[in-house]
Length: 72
Image 1 (tube, rainbow, N blue to C red):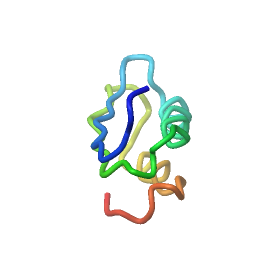
Image 2 (image 1 turned 180 degrees about the vertical axis):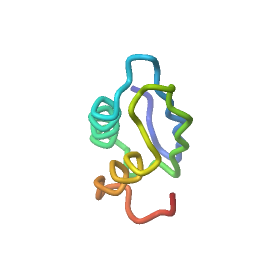
Image 3 (image 1 turned 45 degrees about the vertical axis):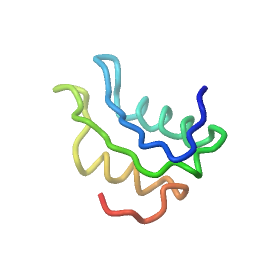
Image 4 (image 1 turned 90 degrees about the vertical axis):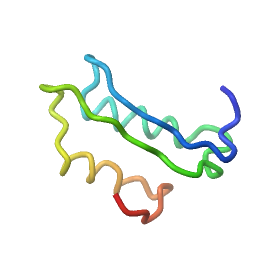
C-alpha cells in the first residue's frame, strides 16, 4: 500500500457493502502504517438497500478512537 502521509482518503461503498463490512474495512484501514498521518477522510453515499443510515454511520465513526473528535 502506498504511504498515507498527508493523505485525504475518499471512501465509498459498492453493492456488496453492508454496515458491518464497512466497519471492518474502516478498522483495517486504521491499522495501516502511517494512518496517523492521514489529514482527512471523505465518505461518499451508500447504495440504497445497504442498511447504512446516517445514525449508524455516525455510530461506527464515533466507535473509532483513532479518528479523534473531528466533526461529522
